[in-house]
Length: 207
Image (cartoon, rainbow, N blue to C red; front, top):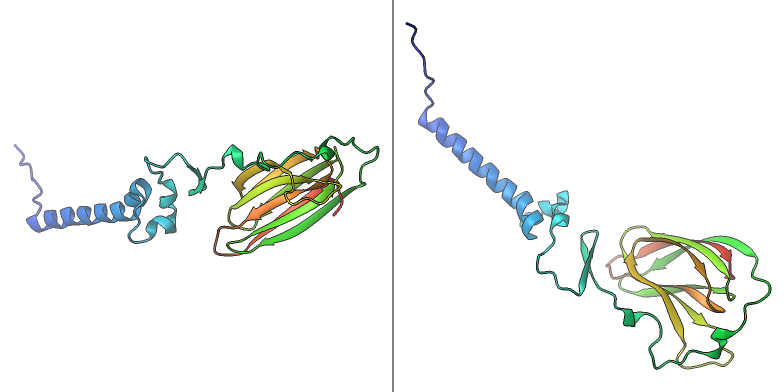
């Protein structure tokens, strides 16, 4: 009858294995689990490897939206366009012209300084058509795509309508001018570095 040999593991080897597993567990906890699950990044590995983007707090307030791992204030309807105290000018109801601007195509670079806002507008006749595409070179910007009615008399409070309010780093669309006047974008850069926006336009407008 053959004898069965049992491998004897020394006590020191068992302790080493336990300590190694304990250290490995702590490393994984600190570098991955804490940034991803709890938003805590004590050694910076969450930001380095992108684990922090996985964290979404359960008690995030209702007035915040999440995009690309960042939070932005929600935009409310009352922010769109002029307030109720600004009267709609009669020029809104002017008829469209018989002939629109000749179609053209342009590419423009707009630099939005860090912590500041800037406007870029073109001039369109009523019912003129334009396709647009824009993208940033890095971060997200706040935008208000809006139009101002051309009025015969100069006024203190200019009436405007907002077509799109959002936080984005890219947008594409087709636009039909509801009235004659200036139409375009207000971009705000809430980051600490300048942002360059490349804007492509194609349609019936004047620079």
